[in-house]
Length: 301
View 1 (cartoon, rainbow, N blue to C red):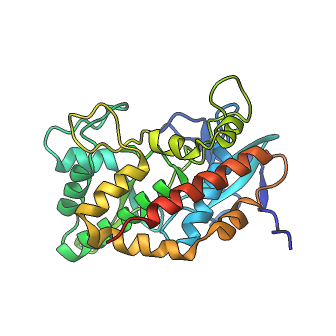
View 2: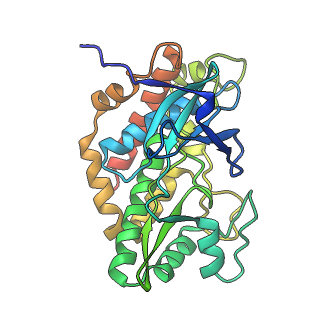
């Protein structure tokens, strides 16, 4: 039976609250009704699949039971985009990774946007260890973060930069409650920047020549392995190396991959409405996730 299509919400102009300064994409906050959560609508960059990649990645996260922001496909004034539900509510404030790292890692530059080679997994885990109050709470947060990296590797998310993760903090009496924020902003996934056909690199050619795996392996993420590295590791290679050093953190999320297979991944892609995603983009997204899935399953802990 065909999968029911994902819903598409039409955002009314009177719902708009304010624009959002962070990031490179045009976006704004809105609320449909008083008392309901705020949502962030993002316009995709031209000729990209940033809207459907956000939605598919969120649905993959849900299948893996990975803590994630809720995402819906949406339209504003005739323009397609994606909407992400705010999770900084109920008295919680979001502190982005660059703010956490600047406070916990000596010399970390929170405003360096590109090739921030201090954004290493070692520094991230050090900052988490120093931010959470007990070894048990820090271990839990790092295990959840490891799940985010496994998700990144599966969907090919290359944009886990230092403003694309964070910690939610809330004052409770005389103390402060800290939890890792849900994973969010997966627009740089699933080959969303590729075109279907072209003279050079394109989805059709990568599929035809069997080079989807090479595309995945050559990707450069936003988390570095060493400060001296010129580029971040691919999401796949990051998990390979990190799981070898921190097996106790990566074993739980890697084990949850058993919830998925090719049919389940196809069932996540299929409900994207017609016209939002081309047949070639669907084929490529499935092939990419299947390659990444098989590579992640090879990791033995």
